[in-house]
Amino acid sequence: MKELRFLDELVQRYPVLEPVKGDILKAYEIMRDCYEKGGKLMIAGNGGSCSDSEHIVGELMKGFVKRRPVSAELAQALKAADPQMGEKLAENLQGGLPAIALTGHGALTTAFSNDVNGDMVFAQQLYGYAKKGDVFLGITTSGNSKNVLYAATAAKALGVTVIGLTGRDGGRIKEFSDVSIIVPVQETFKIQELHLPVYHALCLMLEDHFYES
Image 1: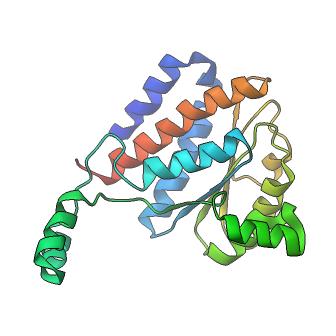
Image 2: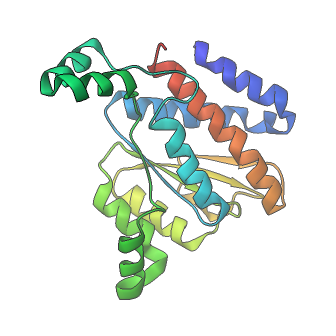
């Protein structure tokens, strides 16, 4: 698979990740298979991991290092819908891999936190969004963030594959994860520093697999 060059480059640049190379590959294969079957990725985390969740969506839902132009068929349909605006859309829209950060829905999350239970906000969103065969990526540096664990529990019940992205000893999310990428460092900021190149590599591999240009 040509996209694996990004994984090889990752461990060359960050040798500390060599022990988890196989887990990163498995996570990639899970995401790839999900997208090939028409599924979507849902992501959640707190603090810096919240920002990482949004960052991942930004890389998947538009061009990352490739242009991802629309198909000729869609370009024609856009122009048929409106010649002027359709032409502009055909020139500018980019292919997207469906991804939702569960961290950015202010009205929903504050309402559920106020009316029900703030620890279960991500789980509530999964219950509303998820279909069997989707993937949930839970990002937690400790592996023990309660709201992420509730979401992982709901995901398993809903037939959603769980990927944990964590550090230290992996925490409790290992119990719920089909694969857990545990970056082998202890301090929170160092874990976060390694999470970014890991998910960049995953996004690069997915883009390379699904898009020619």
